Length: 156
Image (cartoon, rainbow, N blue to C red; front, side, top):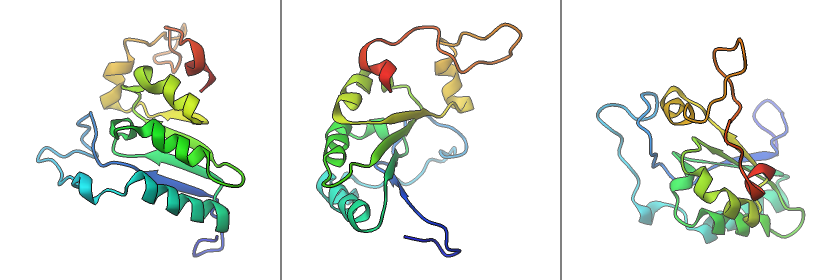
């Protein structure tokens, strides 16, 4: 699959919800946003079907799961498992999250087939992550976490 200027497209950015557990100014204005009703979201089976077509026929090899905050989508690990079990070569499955709910879900997501996690540290989410920050000497900020994760969490 190619874009309008001929570049190869081999990834899919898949938004699984418009909900978020933060109120960052750039995606959640003071007056709020009109949220999509659950009945209007694609079901996991519909998402799987679209992804099967894109990975099987169109050369998609990476699926980035986003939102809103994708960890708010109920039973997300089930969707991850469905996508990891697509016929043929399984796509790389990547999750972009603010990370707030990740400690309670990481093991289940990894077991389901999640390949990688990208944690977006926005100003809004930074308040949460500062409790884990371990700034390196001489640095104003650091991306390291002082509390080590155990089990499969570290494999993500």
